[in-house]
Length: 270
Image (tube, rainbow, N blue to C red; front, side):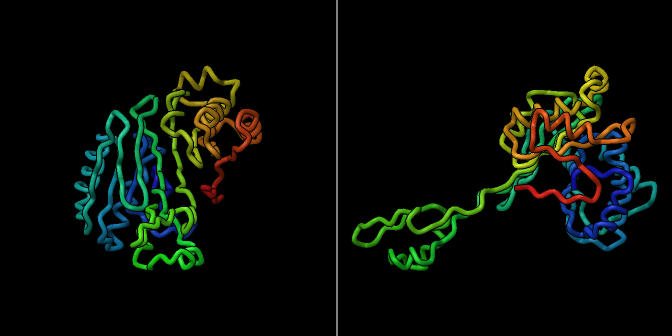
């Protein structure tokens, strides 16, 4: 779960996302619209007798806030809550055999971070007809999946590419929360399949965006272009705008593969 504003639990229920599936929560910064729903969500997990550990990655002061809220409510959680304070520099937060999550600082009025979720490279697939043709024993299939060649006893080498097929490349998603236009972000999110970048204002309010440490449509699209991202999702629109068509038009003028972040819409990372 990335950020947890008020109403998060209602939206989880509305879109039938089970709380029990959430094992890692990333909080980008300590403005209320990004974390005011967290204490309620953690408490609800406890009431539902959750047993699995929960990992929280957030600005350091949030630990005191959560600890105080649990203390004054005399709440004892039936699971272990692990708090990981975000560092001032880029860092790896989670890494396992399936994915890696890393954070990086962005520029906002308070300390703020973005994050990237990267799928690990998937093993190659076995070409069943080819392994029979080249007489590769089944016991060596796992080695082939890792990209290794196979050598027969007589010294004949079976090249890996002769008997395997490339798997689907690992996908990646980057999240850039509230931030001033910062070209360095492009380096952190280079080559991602999907980039979410805030666009609080249209391009004519570039000065206001900078003053409030936010970004415009054109700036978000420029980051996507610089990063060579495949897709761009824009959101965090100022409430001063009643229509969002101009956001899409301005961003697509710079980066055509742009979509609006709209409630209830599913976006495929590919």
